[in-house]
Amino acid sequence: MRNSSRSAVDPFIVMDVMEAARRAEAAGRRIIHMEVGQPGTAAPKGAQAAVADRMARDPMGYTVALGLPELRARIAKLYETWYNVDLNPDRVIVTAGSSAAFLLAFTALFDNDDRVGIGAPGYPSYRQILTALGLRPVVIETAAENRLQPTPADMPRDLAGLLVASPANPTGTMLDRAALAALIHRAQAQGTAFISDEIYHGIEYERKAVSALEISDDVYVINSFSKYFSMTGWRIGWMVVPDSHVRTIERLAQNMFICAPHVSQIAALAALDCDEELRANLAVYTENRRLMLDGLPRAGFANIAPPDGAFYVYADVSDLTSDSRAFAAEILEQAGVAVTPGLDFDTARGAGTLRFSYARSTADIREGLQRLRDFIGRR
Image 1 (cartoon, rainbow, N blue to C red):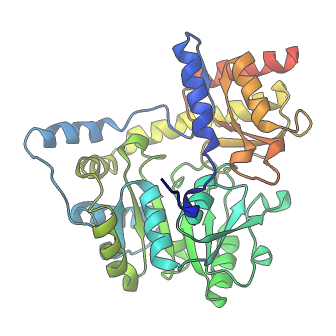
Image 2 (cartoon, rainbow, N blue to C red):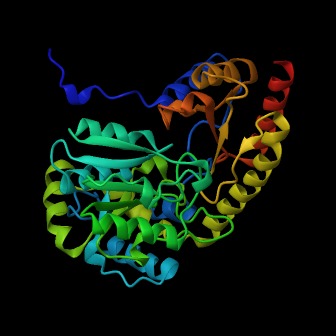
């Protein structure tokens, strides 16, 4: 049977690394996971309790396409608490993870063959989803002196859209208010739609991340319960769109997804009030970050930039390898530590970089760093 040209997307390399790690574990090895951006903690206990209670008394069928009204209202309240933004809940759309939000946003905003700018290094699925939708990802190579974030000077003038992440994956770097505003204003002046990926908000260390909604209402903002709220497998996220786009998104969501999983919406609503547990998770990431910034240079990975948020360290390993994929496989085989090759995030320069995730337990991070030190020492 024939395949579409749109389906010819690259693999998500980190998923291949996860599979290789799974096979090693199935063979009896203990693997330290520094490859995947997944919290080592479960969904908050309050979320689990809410689901158990609801399942006992509610069949939980379809919800309306835009999500449970009480969840949309509670998400809007989060913007008041975190950013002092007065947000109309009608603008909040609950989605089946941030991945569904990207599909909806790209479909609502862009026509076939439109050019959409994305920074490199950056989350690889941006590029692949755009390609699968018949759009043209325009990779913007970012510079180390700009903390691997795009600047207005980097923007081509013929973009239909610009997608920016802060904190970013894989670098953990953030844009301050002035830098984010400069990008938004340049995009708007050029007639370029601006999409802000804010799924790592809440996981910040020395300063609060800035939401695009603090600067403009004429933006798309995408977020998720996967990271800060520790609910990756629940596949629940949200997006905020301008008032005039709500009905467009609603029509698309009705047809593409019907609704986000009802059970996950119940869990998400409760998770928003689990502040104490979520702050405890952040304290673990903070300690893990400290260990990584101290331990990676000691292990031989010295060319790193401290992340402002998220739970990743992106390392230049060009002094150690010219093939990050083979190097990651060597580390997994010889050290029992799974890490992600930079080729996932930057096809042009990623052969000389690795991403280390520190989302797991502090004990795992300590052991992983020791294994990396031993591995480099033997090499």
